[in-house]
Length: 421
Image (cartoon, one colour):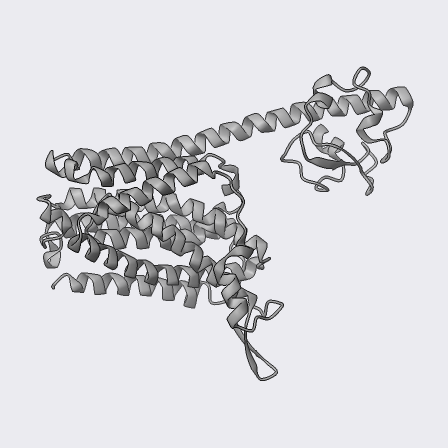
């Protein structure tokens, strides 16, 4: 029971951090800039690594009996010394951090769908993370109790992770529809919901009646989304350790940095097209590890497998991000190549006809045999984009077939001038 003081101390530390965040640094609503968000991201990573060092000394010297109690690992005749505990914490932290990247993408979709002003997104994320901490603490304690009472439940967790990995791999890049979220339907059924935002308020009183604002509905959706992710991530970390203190603390530190990481990566996370493939590999690996946990203990492979887990997680994320960047680079180069072909065709048309194509003529006025390479007509991209006549800065561009998916309708007043820069 002495370890209860470690739990109380850790919870008090996290409460202090959260109070400092909301009450001092973010007392006034504002849009965090990239520099501020990067600063907070590095701060939370540094705090996590510092706590990892603390974990080493806690378990190496068994502060207040931590690591010496008959936890699940001890029952399986596995000694939790400082080095083992530090590796378990760090590996668990990496798993949770990796899975949270997919969570960031979904949160971005939710904010976009509900048109949440950027100045109020921080408030939603703060209370969303606070709710996630409470929810995950309850799930972790329940999970540990179930594992100690029913060892076979680890196999169930392993099966859930394998199913999730398969589903994630099969439905990669599947569209997300926040309007179908059960919390949205429940909120609109049981609460009066205002039609517009009222600053950063979750509740308002209008004409003597209590209403919830759309910001509160967004918070409910974010919380329900985290619950879904927790169902995947909590079993994943049980594949690394069943020590409740390590499971909880690694989860907490991974979640605490989620808010600042969102403002750093929200705009670029969608470009990592192979991220879900990497996450499915990680989930599949830890699922198999859970199913083989008894064999790992039987043949005393715990230390080797812990290192292997660390390597698999890091390599999966590096390969996923690197291949995504390479694919984006190839696609960008192809976009530029096709645009150059198109610009050349339009210039040849202008030199021969004496004017640029009109809005009514479009691409049809550029015969392939005279102006446009055959591939532009035979293999067009699906989405059209708007093109202003070169040099005119016209506000009435004509429509042609898109030469690349990263050009969005109406974003360039003069594609030609943009290309020639």
